[in-house]
Figure 1 (cartoon, rainbow, N blue to C red):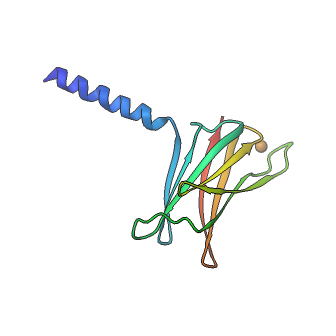
Figure 2 (cartoon, rainbow, N blue to C red; figure 1 turned 45 degrees about the horizontal axis):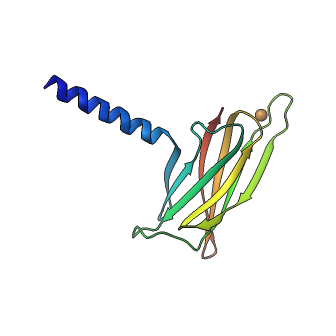
Length: 129
Ligand SMILES: [Cu+2]
């Protein structure tokens, strides 16, 4: 019985590490479920790839939206506010972009999804190392 517990613990740990590989955020906005994945965890100063997928209320992939990623850091002593924006490219039902963080610290990310004349936003923060 003890051995079984140990095996279970190892499995959980292995799964935990596998999931920790990417930085992921899942949020619901309106009737959409939005999944954001970044290839560095934690995100790093410099370039990080970001991949966004969107599903509608029926669970179908939404591939005809215009998705823009805005990322910003508020002003701090000796540094004015920084605001950047990048378009995404659709590939394999996902919206891909590269974000380039110019310094470490807390950044605000705003994923703007425009579809059928309506824009909705998914906002989250990342702690860039
Ligand atoms: Cu700063």
